Amino acid sequence: MIALARKYRPKQFADLIVQTHVAAALRGAVAAGRVAHGYLFAGPRGVGKTTAARILAMALNCERRDAAGVAGEPCGACESCTRIWTGAANLDVVELDAASNRGVDDARDLRERAMYAASAEGRHKVYIVDEAHMLTREAWNALLKILEEPPRGVVFVFATTEPQKIAQSAAPILSRLQRFDFRRIGPHAITDRLKQVLAAEGLGADDDALRLIAKSADGGMRDGLSILDQVLSFGAGPVTAQRVRDVLGLIPDEMYGDLLRLVAERDAKAVFPLVERLVDAGADLGEFVAGAGEVLRAVLLVGLEGTPEGLTEGMLALIERYRSLLPPPDVVRLLAVLSEMETQLRTGGSARLAVELLLLRWAMMGRTVELEAVIRALGGEPGMRPGKGDAPAVLRDAAVRSAAHPSPAVSPAVPPAVPPPEKGPLSLDRLRALWPRIVEDARVKSPLLGALLQTTEIAEVDGTTLAIRLLDTNPVHLEGLERQRDAVAQVVARYTAEPIRIRLEGAARGDRHAARPARMTEEGVRADRLTALRARDPSLNTAIEALDLELLE
Ligand SMILES: [Zn+2]
Image (cartoon, rainbow, N blue to C red; front, side, top):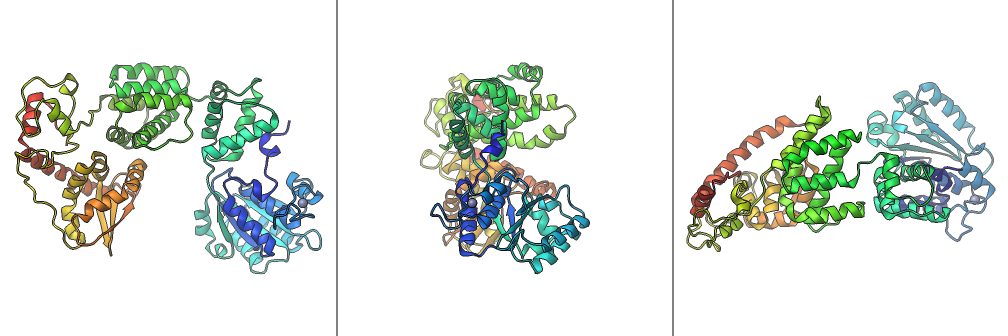
């Protein structure tokens, strides 16, 4: 049995899924007779880099090129195409793996071989150097000499997963290469392709099974097909999600369901039994934590009216069941705890204890309660004095977070302590001084926006562009803010004389020293805001006292 990844390897540019931009450019170059002497194919593993190089070799040497009516496309079936595609005793394509051939001697050898050029008159010879970032500086120097005076009919394709390393060790050669960036293949594209392959093989599979394979393939088509091969080799009949889980040793959805339940219902006592079951089942705890992060991210996405990709039906049903108990501000905080504990989870001595601590912190975390909801629950209009002891039990021990403070409109009895924003010049100092107030305004507009802006600072003002820097490294926060960029611009524009644009900067990873002073300031700001809030709305004070609540922020 031929491995599926090999059997279904594309034979034409048109078969290169997702990399259509590369396929179109290469096809055009072949059709116009303008193929370069050197290419750099950059991108993750298994997305079609060497396949594209082989198709390029086929197109350059095809005996019946353009036969299908598409200029520059190889026929995929002639003797030359077949020879190149199968890799049988091939003189026109030379594949080298830089990870194993990396000495200067190999480069010299390569140079000598390249001088002999193509196997026959009018033919092209394509050298494919895989893992090109592993080549030594000496090897690159030798290659640079070849590319300075390229022999006729010779094309070099350097494939790499780490183009930045080539930029460091062989910058001069980069200017002689035409670069193409290959995209990661998304889960939808992988499942679609797996379906086609299964149909061609006369086999069936559950949609959930294919989703699990696509997820494990992590952006690589070749890996996707290899996993399918593995699953097919265990047992017969249709491919089910259970079969995929068994073969790949995946953690079942039910475990994540139990996790969502214990976090949503704050059932801390369920933490130890859950971790015990995971350990008993031989699950990889690191994988479980990563999976938990993905599930929470999906809950956040659903809460913000997005659609998570690549989840099984079972997982989507679980998320649907618990989403109302896990509103976006809560999930953002859960994810913040995860990113805070990341190092500990990765490097800590006891993985089990670290996971237990993470789950306990999640299960015990206070919930975001909108202040207006607290006041409503106290049975009074905002601004009125609440009665004692008649609050619903659900709020009794909730840690109240002032997600929104009553605006003057809701609380007519209390005059606003802070004047409405004044428009002024767009200067760095002014906006930095105003930033806590602006964040507060954003919070009134949307508690989530306020939460996202909580750990930010103003990096710079450049013309009419305001650069905002995130002080934590959680990618979810950056993504969240990216989506709300217009909303941020609107809030800030209330304070500026001219309309502005927002640019976002991620925190530098591991840059603790830079973040520390900002965090100190943030704490100060938080305390100031709390005092201001309590002074502005006496009902908040009363509510806190009446319910014996802890005000977190
Ligand atoms: Zn052909």
